[in-house]
Amino acid sequence: YAKGEGVQLDVVKALSLYKKACDAGILGACYNIGVVYDDGDGVSQNKQKALKIYEKACESEHIPSCYNLGLLYDDGDGVSQNKEKALVIYKKACDGGNLSACTHSGIIYQFGNGVKQDKQKAFKLYSKACDGGNASGCHNLGLLYYNGDGIRQDRSIANKLFGKACDGGHSSGCKNYRILNEQGVS
Image 1: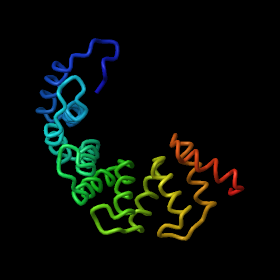
Image 2: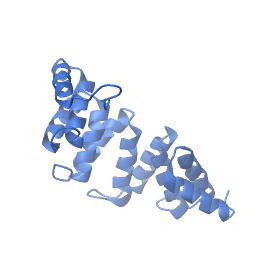
Image 3: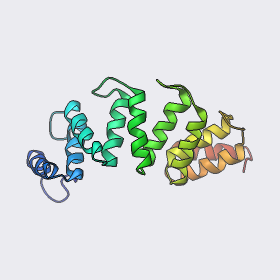
Image 4: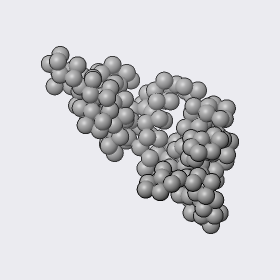
């Protein structure tokens, strides 16, 4: 939702209009309601309202809502933390093209946070995210190669991935790329 671009922001009026649109089946409007309550931007923050609206939109295949819903369960933000449920929701979002959801799933699998650790799944998810241009996915994949974490160590590949992450604006990717270049890794 636009935050007062050239007009005075009236969150109450915006929510009223979003609700009408959401009730009419416009899922982007539902998502916007969820974001307003999730962030508490101009209204009292209400994670439960955000959760319910994200669930409704995600059930109807609105991928950004699925991603935000996954984040709530992943972080335990306004709901009991549930990594397994987050993974199910992230999978839906990742399969729908949300590359950040792929990266977040990879993190859960890489470290076995609340689920059985599976570094091969992490590798595949980071690869999918990176191949799609997600800078965090490239950085995390680079770390796997750098450390030989579940795969054969290859600092040259790691450096290329850090460079790709850096090109995507990932500051740690830039830092790691610079360090490896200083060490003569290309």
